Amino acid sequence: MGLCCDCFRSNGYQQIGQERQGPRFGVRHLQCFLVFTGLAVAYALRVNLSVAIVAMTDRNPTNPDFQEFDWDESIKSYLLSSFFWGYVITQVPGGYLSYKYGAKYTFLFGVLICSCLAVLTPFCAEIGDWPLLLVLRATQGICQGMIFPSTHTFLSKWSPIEERGRLVTCCYSGSQFGTVIMLFVSGFMASSWMGWPSIFYASGVAGILWSIVWYMLSASTPAEHPFITNNERRFIDNSMSESRIVHTEQTRMLHSPPWLKILTSRPFLTLLLVHCSNNWGFWTLMTEIPTFMKNILGVNIRSNGPLSALPYLVMCILSFCFTILADFINGLNGITLSFSRKFFNTLGQWVPMCALITLGYITTSNTNVSTIAVTLLTVAVGVNSATYLGIQVNHIDLSPNYAGALMGITNCVANIIAIIAPLAVGVIVTDETNPMQWRVVFYVSASFYFVGSLLFIVFGRTNIQPWNYPSNNSGNSSIVVSKLDDESNDETSPLNNGN
Image (cartoon, rainbow, N blue to C red):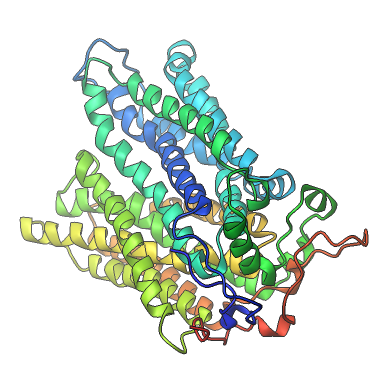
């Protein structure tokens, strides 16, 4: 997977000395595999209650040896949403802390503490019933709020510009992989001799084991990793030099993110709006379409574990397919980084937009129509993974030094939108059997997809912003200096002119 680093004039480089190649498989790939598995564990910890709560409140339990709880729908809703109450709180602090102290440690503590709490979940539910469980889930959300910003900070240091889209996509596909695994196995564990507590024990122990491996084999930057070769470190450093990545802990301590410049930057504000629009559409698909299909088409997806996991499985598979397509497109002469980002983001938002509009006109309940509806839902969710190569990686494009802080801000606001979207559906849909009301919901969500993608096409940028470069008041150079003037980092430059 290593590519020539010094000959990529499209990313602002001139050929300097002998052309060097990074190893085809190196420490950077090991780091990305660890991120992939870490996100898989994190999402397994996030969705474990969604499946377990069915067995915990089952009035006709498949395994009567374990305690059941008399929780009504409102209590279950509070428990399922409490994770996100804490999750939105630590997004921005998580981005700042990962920048200041290193993403290795914020990612580590985010997963480790959440995993320990998962192991304690059955005990807390038994002694404190739902109030204590609600506090525990909110605390887990606080821990996991640091994970996505930490991931962006981590990848901004480890992913060479030439491989950035591919590595970021592969890492984030771990979230879908973890969701699929948890949805598939939870039902079997709940009905086995181990009962529903095993769902929390298994995911918690997996997270603790991953944390040990992560602590031993990861490093916040290539310079801090004990096993990386000089060749691979030079390859990454040369690729990063145009970005002026902050390398040392001393420099991280000296410079805080320029919050005012970030919050008044048009490319960043565009990214924020597009991230919010994508979350509105995506979470409408994931939270409300199953209700629509149950009441209008008579298909209960939530009661079918493999069927409920299908959209996530397709999303995981298509994310790898899109990286292959991206490599092909980026290899074409004259293709710019800006075009690539906007193409995949448009694909990831406008295909689900079309699927939502089509679903609004499916009102007949029969086997063939239900199959079409399930297919549309699966394709819509799956194709949304193309946004990993669009807005999801754009934070690093705009500011490699502060990518975690940017991700913290956008993910915080976008997750608030994800909470508001289902509430808005509740206002529009007063009769769940009325297809016309559902059609309005789909039109609204499709509009968010359309406008968001259009904003990114018109106002989105991929060149590094001036506020990415921390000023060095100490007079000691602790950043990697650009090999070319800033003007050369032009998003009209072709991706592959140097080959």
